[in-house]
Amino acid sequence: MSLANTFPEYRAKMEYHCLGCNSRYDIKELHYTCPECGSVFILEDLTFDELKKTSGKEWRELFDARTATKKDSLRGIFRFYELFAAVMEEDEILYLGEGNTPIVASSPALNKITGIKTAYKNDGQNPSASFKDRGMACAFSYINALLNKNNWDEILTVCASTGDTSAAAALYASYMGGPVKSVVILPQGKVTPQQLAQPLGSGAKVLEVPGVFDDCMKVVEHLADNYRVALLNSKNSWRILGQESYAFEVAQWYDWDLKDKCIFVPIGNAGNITAVMAGFLKLYELEIINELPRLFGVQSAHADPVYRYYSVNDPKEREYKPVTVQPSVAQAAMIGNPVSFPRVKHFAEKFEAIGGKNAFQVVQVSEQQIMDSMLLANSNGHIACTQGGECLAGLIRAKELGLINENEMAVLDSTAHQLKFVGFQDMYYQNDFPDEYEVTPDASKANKPELVIKSTEKDSLSEEQYISKAADNVVSMLGLEKK
Ligand SMILES: *Cc1c(COP(=O)(O)O)cnc(C)c1O
Ligand SMILES: [Zn+2]
Image 1: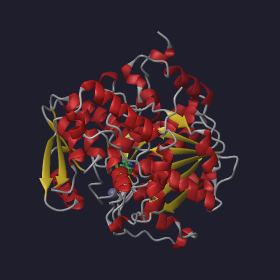
Image 2: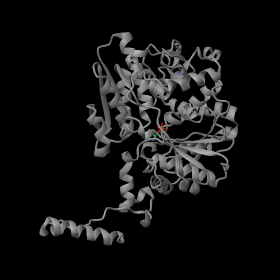
Image 3: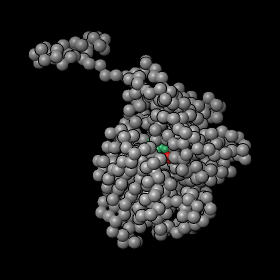
Image 4: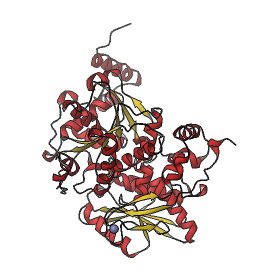
């Protein structure tokens, strides 16, 4: 059997490290937040330095060889097993087709508009149609390992969410089945039927709480403090680990050469940008890459606490303040008090220490720019969600501000599939955005279906007459000319 198909022997010694009070906890237990101070954890491999005995070149060759593997345990995000969660046994790893999402270069026409080479990484092509699957694959594999070790007969996975987190959690829970029961807690009446469809279809128990998302969060955290439940919101540090795979995949796609690459990521609860930074830093430490890319976080002016923090130039003057959000089309990033902010600070300092002051920046964009950019991307062959539109808007903004050179290229994160957020496209085309969104549709961009023939007219005609009439109408609607 080739090296690429051999499950790794290396096992990490991992610990939870609290970013608030620096205390450390064994991973034998399922911790959500620090029992001492309530702050968030990052998971650290205490034996990481052992990985340095393998050269960067050897790592690159190993990971490249694994791209051809047929082993489920190494096909998805766990292709990079040694780098992030090397504590699960092979049969504990879940693979539902997550990771390995395509990077699609933009068309010449779109590149001309942006002024630099652009590409989208389509994380909407994950199984539940968002990047959240990366983190869930890791979190559920860990739950699987816990079940094995503890012989538990039941575990309840819980999350508060209105969108992609619950869709992903419910999907992985339904695959595991058996002792795993999935519960999703949603704010009553505040979710659309589409947002409900995924967890319902996966068979999760869906509970509704009067109030808003924050009320659901409080209920869920109370449960986690007092009962044996696995909380899957993004404070869960196993999810962050799994999401590091995004960085590994970007690096690998560009043959481990990130010179002149600018990576754009939308920021909501800030778990994703945390993971992307952590991932690139690991590759750098192991000399798998020789240079960090430049990283741009993007926030809407309607939900921009991280932008506000970093917009103050002098680090000593910076002050973190939650904001009150306004409605945003980048709904999955509409968060005023990101739980992973301490993690962002932690990794951004390291990122800047290596890559310099311009290695990590946050730009702010308007709702109008987000919508216009999403439509621009998708009318040029992409499948970007509103958050993907936010990334393109961020690139255009960064160029305007002179933050990007012509010789650089941009990799934009479409964090979900276009189809999940299609309601906002409808609002644009129908020109019925509520005022709070501050989006004024450009009528020339509206695309609507046109009726070829009325059904009453169809009923009055014979089959033959109907086909000929309908075809005539199409000819005049399109202005077709005879061959
Ligand atoms: C969760 C989510 C985000 C925001 O990611 P964070 O990790 O919370 O910053 C952006 N886009 C989509 C589609 C998401 O589901
Ligand atoms: Zn603590």
